[in-house]
Picture: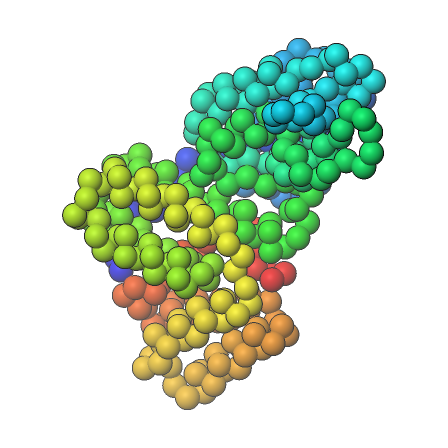
Length: 326
Ligand code: SF4
């Protein structure tokens, strides 16, 4: 594989939509915020945040009466005032979600506030007018409209970012989506699609061998169908595959595959050391960053025509240290 083309390393800053309160803006119903230290610190150094508070944007003000999702029967839940159920900004929140999704068409991802009747991405409490325990199955109305309009956008909630695997998965998807959109902007051709896929092959394998093979078959037939049609199908399946959880087992398979490509280049001592490090990762004794660092060292000394350009070895900036905890 030759040096990566420009569309594989887009330089434009990645813009991330975010619930304003997570950045420390005092926009909550009670005039408070929900600043998240990891987001406002570590992630703010890598991304350009685009803060949005839908409840303020639709004119509810600060402070304001709190809302909750209510199943009023016969349709999707509504966002109603907790104390005054005649307060119903549901339609305004949905319309604003659709409007912002159209306006913010250049986002690379979105971070939503967990549990919010407007911003929650999933598992928001839905109450019944008659009372009783809420069902934890709702989606914030603004978030729901936004996600429906941008189904490929990598979205996550701040509460789930505390889990190293979920955090790593979201950030990996953000960078992969950024490259995908850069390819579309540069103009998709069958040849470029092949190159894009080849560079992501191992990253995809880590998320599922079968979906990765299906994508490979789609790319192999790219020249026989309209490229826009193939691209739409590929983009959807590519992002869906990356959403699947990569396991220690699937990472081990990928590491062993990389090790196999170095077979002839390494001497017996280096081969044994690499095998031991991969086994230690498989046994949970060292994090993923350890075998990856050793592999990168070997690929620097023994460049390989296809493996060295794999995004799997460098899916996001190293300073995020996402592979130190998985
Ligand atoms: S969760 Fe959403 S609606 Fe609520 S304060 Fe934060 S940004 Fe505003």
